[in-house]
Image 1: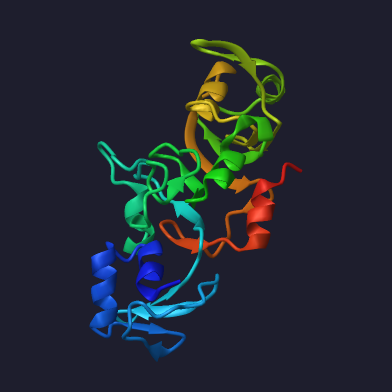
Image 2: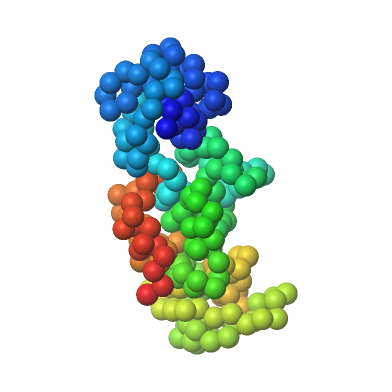
Length: 243
């Protein structure tokens, strides 16, 4: 792949911008400066390069995890709150648009006041695999409630729960009380405000919500709110697991 094309594919600006970066001597590949924008580079995942002195690693497709903090919207065009995309570096935000959609997209959404594990990618097939209800990828939520959690409420959440304005019953794949005012809820669907609506339907109210796991992929303890990292192949496989 030509070096200028490689930079463009990684989100370092328009083609003319990428051309200029190389011609100005602002790009190194594997530690060596490259001045020819048309030089053929063996583009493979893990290739290290720098642009204007800042290190970057080549990824043909982006697979990311983000620890979403409270006070951010999962939207490219947010309203009252800042977008989670502002937490990503410019190259990830600027990866080329594909199929009319932004290059890197959040897979599903978390409300602005919900925290926890969020996955992002520009791989359309993987996005579909992770977000389609038919694949039943489990998502685990840590829930804080306004009132004490009762055994009856846990039992109801494991049975059919009818939500307001939605006649089709839903149920938790797993549910357990984790404290007097907290529970762990596992869902395989992704309805709008589903956790909050389910808890309300059994007579309680959510006051705090955190997603701790998708598939077998847990939010790492060392990934702080607002931080992100690349997913390797093993992590992607874990996130797809339904067991």
